[in-house]
Every structure is written in structure tokens, then in C-alpha cells.
Amino acid sequence: MKSTLLLLVLETLAAAQSPNWTAEFANHYATQPNITYLVANNYENKLDLYERRDVPDAQPTLIYIHGGGWTGGTKEAGFNKVLPYLEMGWNVVNVEYRLARVSEAPAAVEDCLCALRWVAANAKAHHIDVNRLVLTGDSAGGHLALTTGMIPESAGLDRECPGVPLPKVAAIVDWYGITDVNDLLDGPNLRNYAVQWLGSSPARAETAKRLSPLEYVRPGVPPVLMIHGDADPTVPYQHSIRLKAALDKAGVPNDFFTVPGGKHGGFSAEENVKVYAAIKQFLKKQNLPVR
Image 1 (tube, rainbow, N blue to C red):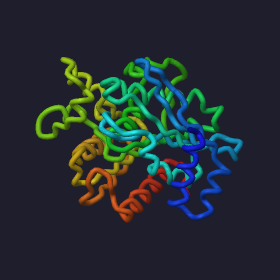
Image 2 (cartoon, one colour; image 1 turned 120 degrees about the vertical axis):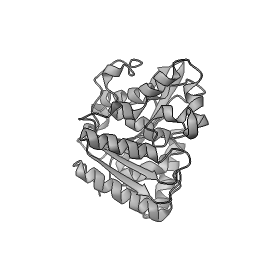
Image 3 (cartoon, rainbow, N blue to C red; image 1 turned 30 degrees about the vertical axis):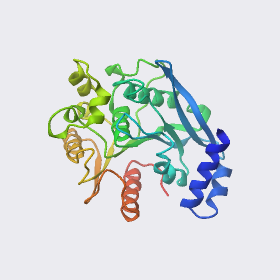
Image 4 (cartoon, helix red, strand yellow; image 1 turned 90 degrees about the vertical axis):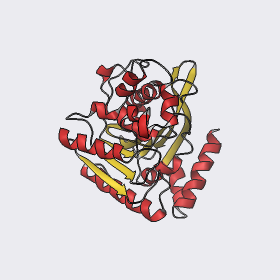
């Protein structure tokens, strides 16, 4: 399995970068796939670790969380989102979590908090700088990046994995993530994926509120970059507008990149070039290394 994943990584990088990048990646990175970071409901949650092996000191590290409406998707399918960070020389942690068919809400949120705790607990062994952690994800993964970076331990959603304190991440890069889960359960913005994730519990509205990033906006949460197409049919564009307004009110540093006419991802090459330029500019503002 390890050799297969490494081959996939190298082939992808070779297609995306210069001919020398494949050799450079092999020389500079150790690939460790499918590390179990949590067992919950008899399900083994796994993550892939791409670790710099050519450096003696701790490195900035991206934690990527895949999308799929909390009901589908895989960590492998979202690998293209981490390529720019590997090119910059960062470590990358690519996280899976329990989908709705395994466990309904709040399982996915709990799992991602536990992944963050695993990163903190294993930072020294893997050249990870806990002061330079960045969370990112798309769609449901954007939601989970926000909740993982914003939910405090006092909320009690990290009890599946007691251990070291949850670190404060340096920044969150949110690709069209859900910010108000209740908004998707009824009314004009009803989405079947959200209904499936929350199930039919009588307390689903309370649970949805507890899992909504808008509920955790407060002074001191990590800086946030929001990326959203203004014609998104899957996650309402208004979710990012509302999040920005809340962050501004709380005095939280944030940037908002709108893709005009953009749908739910699937942006053009030209649009993605602009998006990643905005991401690098945002990371620079947080004193994170980019190249």
C-alpha cells in the first residue's frame, strides 16, 4: 500500500510540476499512509503523513480535510489540494473521518479534533511545528477545517481522544465551507447531505447549532481565508458572507476571495492560479513561509 501511494504521489507531482520535481519530492519527503489516529465505533480513522526528512527542525504543516457533504469523499481524492503546500516544502497531514453511513453528526467534527490532537501529540517525532499549523478543506471539509480550528476544548467535542491540549492553529483556509448547519436542514436552502448527516434525532437543531462555525466566532480565533464561488449551488455563497461579517465584528483577521460565477469548486486553471495567489498572500500576512 505504501509503495502504491508513493507512486501515485510521484506521478501526480510529475504531471503538475517541472520534470525535476519528482526526484526532489522523493529526496525530501517520507510518505506514511494510513496511520490510525483514532478508533471510534469500531472504525479506524486514518491519516496520511508527508513529512520532510531532509530537515532537522520543525516545519510548517498543513492539515487537509476532504469534502463530500459529510456523506462521501476520500482523503486520496482531494490530494490535488495539498500539492502547492508540498511544493512550498511544508509537511502535509491528509485526514479522513467517519462519514454519515458509519456515524452521524457529530462524529466527523469529533474525529477532526482528534486528528489535530494526534498532530500535536506526535509533532516532535515528525518535524511538525505546532505553532505553524494551517487547516484547510473544501465544502464539508471547509466546515470541518473551521470547526477544528475554532471549537474550544470546553465544548466537549474532543472527548473521544483525551490527551495533550488542542493547539491553536495559525490559520484556516476555508474552501466554500458550510458555516450554518441548521440553514441546510429546512427551508429554501435544504440540502439532502446535511439531512443525512444529522439524521432524525429530536435534538438535531441543537446538534446542528453546536456544530456550526458561526457559533464559535469570537476574538482570538485563528485568521480565516474564505474562498467561494458566488454561483455555488451546493453550499450557499451567503454562508461565507455571513462568516466574514461575524469575523469582522469580532475583530478576527480574515480575507474573502470570491470566484465570480464560480460553482461548487471545479474552478478553471486561471481561477485556481488566482486563488492560490490569494492563499499565499494570506499566509504571508500570518508570517508563514511561502514560495
